[in-house]
Length: 544
Image (cartoon, rainbow, N blue to C red; front, top):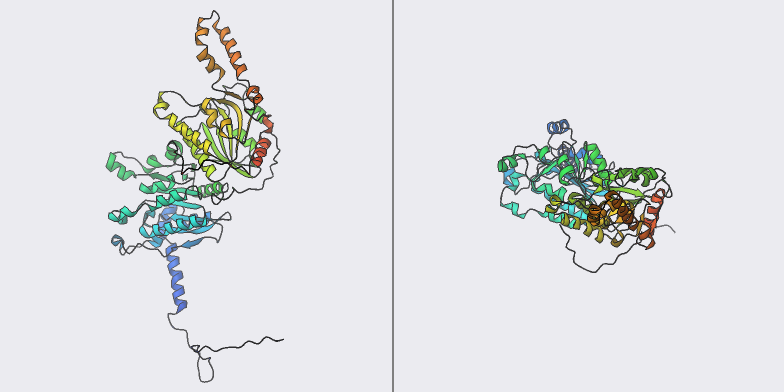
């Protein structure tokens, strides 16, 4: 059978050209010309503030907003939204002024194969200041990121709110940015890369984000820039000294990582996101590794000194047990008595919380408790298992830390570790004293596996401290104080013998240090299907 197609002529269709009829010429100014106009406008917008401003940006050692996006995204995947943006018609102060894309490039693209929402402020356009149209663009992007469950990345290089538009009474309706950022928190990963200044209220963008890398000498944030600071307080200070990378990555803790330039910053963003799922409903992504699960390490027998008073570098332990020796530090130069980093075990991303005996013996103080609590909350929000490496002498004591609220800060860490429902594995390397043992995921805090090295000591305090408290009077009254002290020390050491908690099932095993890596991997895999039921509540009241 042969198919037959019946052609039906449309009444409004033009008659075909034929004898006596010439084909119609395309109209001048038709679709082709209009399309060319689109490309011209796009090309102009992509120049941002123009060649001179771009040259100045490069002279400062900075890439432009679009160059940063090109570096971040897989080639050819970035889709821009709002390229034709301009100052909003309602802003009379901006009438007649040029601001291509209104100073912010928005869109989505793939970052190592994963689709992410990206907002890059363009310092070549009115110093990257935040105008009404630009923020409408970013607000739409935030809505898309949340509804599509995509990670959100800010590339920040902005003078802050555009004063020409924000000085009037319309400012009262602003602030949606931060409200929406709070809603996104814990749902999708949020990264705020500080690649330039970020002054005034916009400094809350990084403050509410999950990861804040800062370019040294370029990235800076402060609630009031140098000019306003001088006007209000009389203090004459540079932006770098007020809120640069050294300030926020070493002192305040607002920044997470110091990097040397834009390229290193972009790489840090990629590395960070590689440990995370796209949203809280997914598992962290697995990665293939050639590092054997059952690999033993002879070096682990040599790293920890025999004397509990001698320091060592916990990074040496971490490097020996994680996949390929690779870890990604969070806040490495802030609150250095504790380490918080990402790594992988058998291809599984994990968050590591480890005491650092190299710094004040690994003691916990206000900032280190805050640092650990925030990291634990972050991992728990995105289904990243936690590994705790304990060598903790307890919390810092004294009037200075008490007056600064160490009880409150320590309670944050207690709260975070208690609340976390992801798989948790604890390895006691050496000291596990007092409340430090609790907050480092001790037996009562639901570790799915808790093991100890033979060098471990679990006690309210060390033998020397205990003797100094309970035996002081007897030692002072003794005819031979040194001998009396030695006898007491021996008695206390017998009481804190590791085989006592092991014998009473308070820890799951005493392991050969060389077995640490395979032990952790087995524990994580056992706990992969973990489910914890908590009583329903709107939310707890976290001590802050």
